[in-house]
Structures are given as C-alpha cells and as structure tokens.
Image 1 (tube, one colour):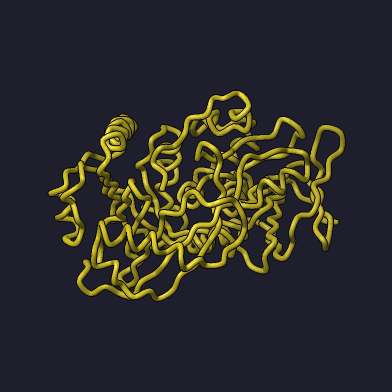
Image 2 (cartoon, rainbow, N blue to C red):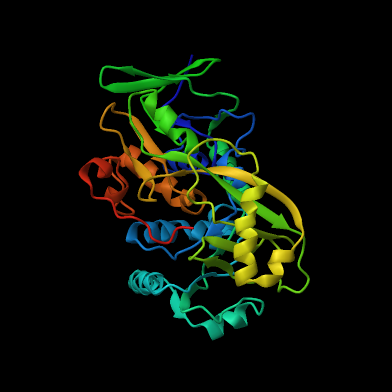
Length: 384
C-alpha cells in the first residue's frame, strides 16, 4: 500500500494542472496521480480541439479564462515551454434577434471584466474571411485575444514540472473504490493496489460521476459525445482566420495550424454515453450548416474524423469544490467542453482550496455542488 498527502484521480489536463499547482505551492507534498488508461492524456484531453476564449455569458467563466490566459499567451515564461498558442480570435455570428441581444449583454459584461471583445457588423466579418456568407446575419461578436493551443503540450508542461517536484504518475490504475473512515476519505483502491491519503481529488472528467458514486457523492455531470471532422488543406483559405461559431446551428470551424481545418458542432443534444464511434450520418448536419455559412467547406475533402466525450452539467458550468460528506473528497469536473482552456485556473483554485481551506484567486461559490440543490444556477449562454 502506497501513502500520499493527496491522490488525484484522472490523468488529463485538469488532473495534471491540479498536481502541478499543489506541488508548486508546496514541493514537500507527496502527490500521486492515478490514470485508468495506459497513458496520460488519452481520454478527453486527447480529443479537445484546443480553443481558448473569453467570450462567455457569465462572470465565472470569464474569470476562469482570465486566470488561465497567461499559461497560453505567456507559456514559455510560466511553464518553460510553448503550447503553440495562436491568438486568431473567436467570431460568434447569428441571424436571430434574441441571440443577438444576448450577445450584446455578453459583450457588456465581458468589457466590464476587461475583455477586449466587441460587437461586429457583417461587413467587417467578411473582411476576416471572404468565403463567409454574411448577407443574412444581424451581427456578431469578436475578441482578438481568443485563440487555440495544444492540449497535450499543456498537459506535458504541467506534468514535467510536477514530476521535478516529486509527482508520481501511475497509469492503468482505474479507481474501483474510495475508502473512508467515519466522516473522512482515507484513500482509494485500484485492481492493483491500495493508496492511502487524507485528500482525494476527483478529476476524472467524463467518469467523475462514477467516481463520486463510489463514495456516495451524487455529481450531476454526464458524458456526451462530441464529433469533429478534419478536412484536407484548403488552399484558397488564409493561413489564419477566426474560429467561427454560428450560434443558430452550433456549427463551428477553425484552422488547425497552417494546414487542416476542423469542423463540428450541431450535435449538442445527443443522449449521454461513452460511445466514441464516429457517426458519419451525423456529419450531414455539419456539412449542411457549413454549406450555408461558408459554402466552399461543403465540398471539402474529409481527411479524418473522431469523436470524444465531454462532461456536461445542467448549467454548463464546472463543479469545483470540496464535498460536504465525506471530508477530504474534492471535485473538479463538469466543465462542459471548457476544461482544457480553464485547466490552469482549475488547478490553481483547487490547490488554494486544499491548502488554504478556500479559493482566494476568485470566488468559486457559483461552482459548488450545492448550487444545484439550492437552485442558484446561472446557465452559460455561449454554448455550441
């Protein structure tokens, strides 16, 4: 049986960030990270498309991006390595009056928080991508500081620094039980071994509700499949253009590096599950939406497609808190497709919560598990 001060369950970018931030605060800590797969980063992190944005409708999500942003824009200073961040901007567009009014409210909130987002008219959108159809659009929003980065690179950055401070990373170690004595957790068990620690952090992503159930904690976060298709290079498109989101359909497109183009969306309402089989018929809606908004993409040659799983909560906000019962059980999950971009902040805040008894970098009351019982949820509107 191995012993530690903290056990982190989940070897994705959120688990890696938590381990890094704990050891950055106190290198004397003994931290063990357990990953059920044969390699870290092969779950939800491996399927993340890498988006980083400030354009949210709630102060909580905006603040999470602001806390995380230096890890992308200034990664070489903060982490000692590049994460290939490209600030190409996000462009949200709509034809719907109600949606446009919500975008206006979003921008007003974002600007109060210091975000450089703004309303944008169709003519200016056209200048950003000439192939974009804008005749039917009412308008949209744009933030030049939004962009994309490499999820695996960020994870490896966190783990490399954490390992230097003594982090133990153990793979092929699925947690099958969480041990408790009275009102406290005392460790976990895997098929191979038992691990004893007074603090267990549930960062298991789409499997976090299952880990919570092991200790009697109901977590309203469920796994939903998300599909992405990758096209061959499109020579007539610029090397850099904004990540475009059509909020009317949920369709999005952005360039990956200087070659491939990623498209997805339109599948937000699927039933929960862990199936990552590609449903090729479902891409009909993607191509239909693409043909309407950026017609050349409807004829693009598909190079490959893949499906991942993201963990969604009813209000599209994550859960970041200490469980009331049992003590010592912490939760960091349900970030609704934003886990990668918010992972630096999640790790920072979780380290504060564990080591100081409360988060000090921002108010995380809106991310508590208790909000669902109290009915104090604030739903994120900018979802696709």
